[in-house]
Image (cartoon, rainbow, N blue to C red; front, side, top):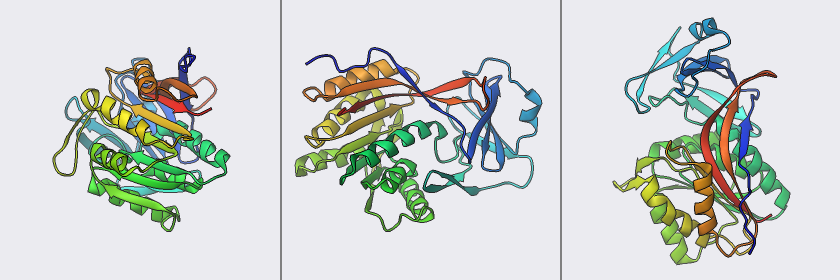
Length: 298
C-alpha cells in the first residue's frame, strides 16, 4: 500500500464568526470577543507586539493565572458574569467563565466542526459517531445537527450535564445522542468486546486527566493503546478517525505516524498539522493552538 500520509502539514485556520473573534494578540496574551464580551486570556507564544495595547485595558474580563497550569481567576471590569449563550452554525451552547482560563469550549475547534459538518452531510446515509473526551458537547451537537447518531463520552459528570444542557439549547435533545459518563479507555474496550462499530470517531484527549472512579489518563502512555482500540471499532466502510491533542511536547507529524500505525491495512489518507486562530482583518496574525491527525476514507 502506498504511503497514506500527506507529505505536507495543514494549518486548519479558524476565523471569526458571529459569536467569536480573535481581535488582537501580543505580549503573551490574546484579546477575544465572545458574543458581546471582550476577554483577555494568557497565550505565552504571542511574543510579538499587540496592534492596540490599550484595547486590552478595556476588556470586560481578564484571566489572571495563578500557576503554570491553567488554574487562575477571572477579573471583571463590571458586574461578574457566570455564563451566557453563544452559537456556531445550528448549535447553541453556554460559554462559562471557568477557573481554567477557557470558557467551556475551544474556539479553534471550529475548523474541525466545519470539517465534521461537511463530512457527515456529504455521506447522505446513516452515520454513527463516537466522540471521546467530548467535554461540553459542541462537536457532538455539530455531528447530530448534520444528521448523525452520536455517542458522547466524557469522564466528568459535570461536563456531560453541561453537554446535555447545550443539546436542549440547540433544540437537539430529542435526537439520537447517548450521554455516557465513563473513562474513555474502558468504554472503548467494552465496545470492542461487544463488537460495536462506528462510522466516525473523534478523540480530543487532555495531556493528563482522571476518570470517574479515579482512573489516571496520561497522554503519552495511554494514547497509542486507545487509538488502536478505536481503529478496531471502525466499520469496514468507516469514514474517518479524528485525533486532536494540546500537549506541548507532541506534534502533528507524531500524531500522523501514530494514526498510520493504528489504521494500518485501511485505504484512504492521513492529513495532519495544527489548528490555529486567526486575528480578524486582512493582515491578521495566527496562533497555532493544537495538533491534529485524521484518517479519512477518501
